[in-house]
Length: 86
Image 1 (cartoon, rainbow, N blue to C red):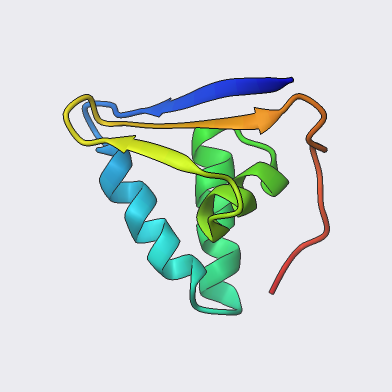
Image 2: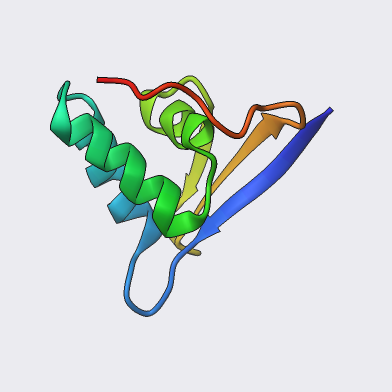
């Protein structure tokens, strides 16, 4: 069974734009990748492994520009922690 989740925009951050910027940073190995994962994880309260999956594309997302949301589904058995990735 999958859990449907949604990241929403605030007055300060437009989530689709921030998400795309973090995806671009994720493509760069090393510090930029680690920071992208940390920003998404800390900023939205996501498990590190989930943030990594979203940024890498292994978790499919639906971006809605009009509502400023990023929606996705994860299995309800996703682990909450993972090894750091460089």
